[in-house]
Amino acid sequence: YINIVGKLFNECADFRRTGSAALDLAYVAAGRVDGFFEIGLRPWDFAAGELLVREAGGIVSDFTGGHNYMLTGNIVAGNPRVVKAMLANMRDELSDALKR
Image 1: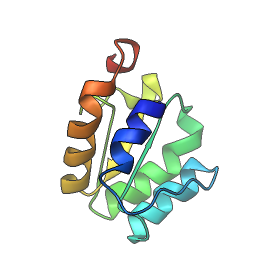
Image 2: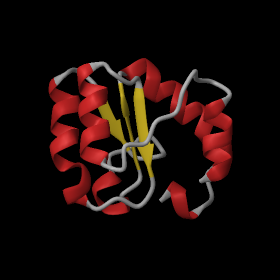
Image 3: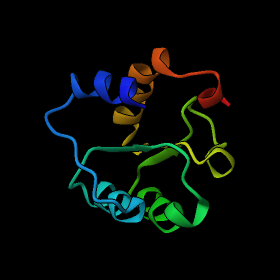
């Protein structure tokens, strides 16, 4: 996790964590923040926020760019350009467990 944060930190101006995945995803949907990622969430942590992001035109994926995040709890969200960039930066830092 810290390796992913370190790599992404070099690519962005600021990192914020509110402590609530739903609120962070609402901020993504509203355009207050560009992207979001987290490891090991439960579906009830992000289900409402996922809907907000999708309705706002964003995308939500797992760490491999797939749609397995409901099972893994590993989630990346943002507009398509941001998610693509985040996934590219994260790719080399993912352990085998996070690639599932």
